[in-house]
Image 1 (cartoon, rainbow, N blue to C red):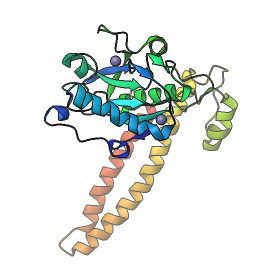
Image 2: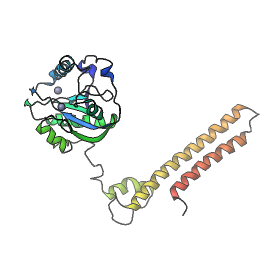
Image 3: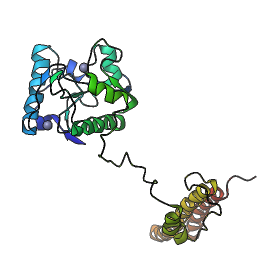
Image 4: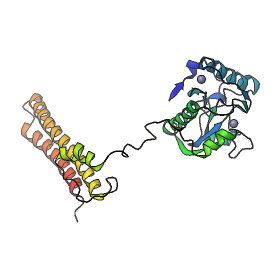
Length: 280
Ligand SMILES: [Zn+2]
Ligand SMILES: [Zn+2]
């Protein structure tokens, strides 16, 4: 995500206490907005000044304590931090709606530039995912007009939002791709199972749904943990033995080592149980 922090775009300080109001509950999701006025595209070196003018109009014209939106996404795909993840926005129509969802505004007009650009759609998508992961926000997604009487965010953006805000054709991101899609069972066998000495499953089912294969995945994970435990056991035994020696003659070195070794052994036995499953 191409985040532009408030310091980077030269935001004014917000007014307190209102501008510092935190969200009162978990966000349900994200609402997408547009400017609702004429907008002409410009080069990116002019975008920060535009966002500053937006903040000025919200603070001086509307009398708000800060820019209203949580984030503002320019046509070049940069996401300008408005009220951000923690401070309640003032753009969704009323206090309850502001508290309910984040407000992400695209620099798209009701005249002039009315179609979002592909980099912008990617930038909005980045911002939605950022809100979900870092806010956090739930996966609800809509427009300003959902639940409030407005035409915002305009036809083109709203149609895109209602399709689930997909990334434009031709763009790829790790989130979009299924990393398993191009991997065959033979690839996995050669790369993993063969190396670990685990037999391949006997039938030809899909690797992602074959229950035997899934069970072997669990086994392989447990084996890795046991190997790690064995190393840890040796290291801990040596460390405890050394410690006991250093403490002095009042300490029963053998008893300390035995007690620690028993604790480690118990832990390893527990891992064995995990491997074999619960007793039938
Ligand atoms: Zn709006
Ligand atoms: Zn820009």
